[in-house]
Image 1 (tube, rainbow, N blue to C red):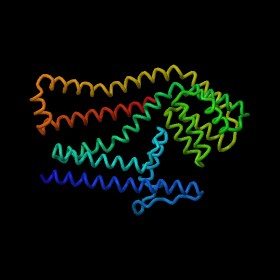
Image 2 (tube, rainbow, N blue to C red):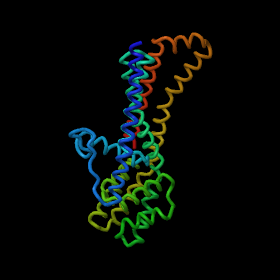
Image 3 (cartoon, rainbow, N blue to C red):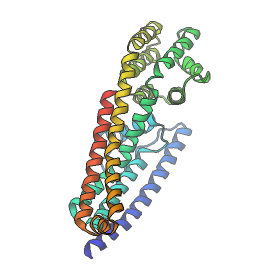
Image 4 (tube, helix red, strand yellow):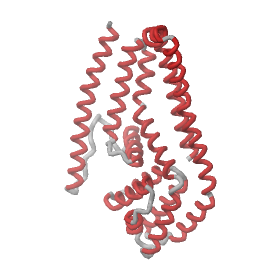
Length: 312
C-alpha cells in the first residue's frame, strides 16, 4: 500500500512538473523568437545556477538534440524534447512500482520509457538516411548544373535554383530546401551544413558539405571539386546499393523477436487463456518475465540502430 501511495504521489508530481516545464519552454521559445524579430541577441536561460546552454554537458546535450531534431525535420525545441523524456522516464518508474513492486523493475521500465523519444528520433533519422541514400547523387548532379549556370560564384543562388526546379525526390527535396532556408535566414552556416550532412548520414554528404563550406567562406570556385565528387560517387554507387540491402536486413532482424514474442503469447492465450492470464498478468513472476523480455527486445532495437549507423 505504501508503494502504491508513493507511486501515485510520483504521478501527481510528474503532471505538475510537466505542466510547469512545458509552460516555461513555451514562454522561453516565444521570448527567443521576439528577440530575433527585433534584432537583439536572446539572453541565455538560467534554468539552474552555473548551467550554460553553450558549454558543459548540458549545452552539448542541447546542441546534439537540436542537430538531430533539425536533421529529422521535427519542429520541437530541445527543452520540450528533454521534458518529454524526463516525464516518460518518471512515469515508467511509477508504473514499475505499481505493476511490479520492485526497485529493479521501476528503474528498468523508467529507463526504457525515458529513452524512447531519443530512440524514436534515431529511428526516424535512419529511415530518412535510407530513403535519401540512393537519391543523393542525382541531387548533387542537379546542383552542379545549377552551379555552372549561375557562373560558379553564387552557392546560395544555385541551391535556391535547385530547390525551385522541384526535380528532387520528396525526402531529398526537404533536406535541400531546409539547407537553402537556413543559409538564407540564419547566420551560422557551419551549423546548417552540419545538420545537412547529418540528415544524409554518409561520407559523401560530409564531402559535399565541406565543399559548400569552402565556397561560402572563401568564395572559391568549387566546380572541379564537385565534378570529382560526382565521379567518385558514380564509381561507388553499386557498393551503396549493396549496403542498402544489408541495412534492410538489419531492420527486419530487429522486428523479428517482437513477432516471435507476440506469436508465443498468442498461442498460450489461445490454448489456455485462464492459466495464461493468471501467470502473465496476476503473478508478479510472470509480469517480471515479460518485463525482462521487453528489456531484451529494447536492447536488440538499440543494437540494430547502432549497426545501422555503422553501415551508413
